[in-house]
Image 1 (spheres, rainbow, N blue to C red):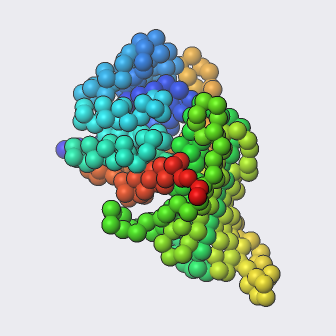
Image 2 (image 1 turned 90 degrees about the vertical axis):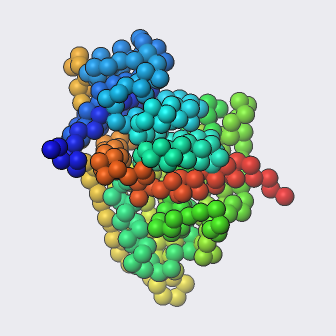
Image 3 (image 1 turned 180 degrees about the vertical axis):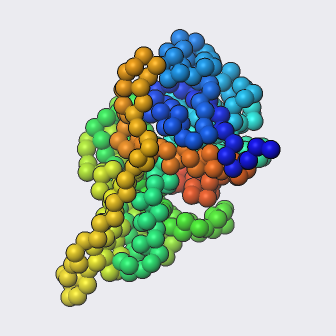
Length: 354
């Protein structure tokens, strides 16, 4: 009998863009994992991607890829506005789903997708990959240990001069800021629910591109326990793309790239005016050493498109684990946490300063 904890997980890639090029390299290096299919909006696109990465089944539609009877998990890397419909397509065909962020434009649509997966008893993971990095777990350990005292606030900044007008800055980079604040200031073990007192947007300001999409947004969020979080996101200018957590006895700094972190710095502050600073304690985490940039079928080594893409292995390995254990969500990023983040993003987008 096959050991269910080591059974081979068979993936289909839906979408052939930059992030799909990174993820396929990750999946091909995970143990007991196969990429058996790719789906695109055209036969030519599927063939180009499939030939490049040695994927045998090449489909000229997402429907064909999702309905392949041998596929266990669909990785949704289609254009972001298609994410909800493509997730539902995969779920309709009985597939587990890992969906790139943002899985939906708002919390209402996100709930529809998550409810569909839950009703079908299928695994769904929203690809906010930050949650699966070892450094993020270390951050919670430091907070929970009381090492920096009582945590009262946190901030995050994710601004890049790339993509203004093509999409929403809130959904593209702001979602990483919101998830970080939730991780730092919320209760990661809370189940959540409609009657729970969750975080509330207390202020927001945004500028719009001529396309109508937000291009620069700042927000202030109050979390339970009198904790305040703030963030800035933009697709029209740069920032250092770092994050900081502030406690009564010190701070935790997460430098670039805070959304896929490999370094955490802790500085304790005591004495009159909190002016006595300890020598910073730095925790560093190497990316998976067994994940490398692969050669294509024609011998090219294009590398990865995004910083720390090797860390996608944490997310993909978690999906494999959850699938093998017949889970329908990951404990590291529950459906309720996902909905809460998208509710915050929605409320920020609608915020009207009085």
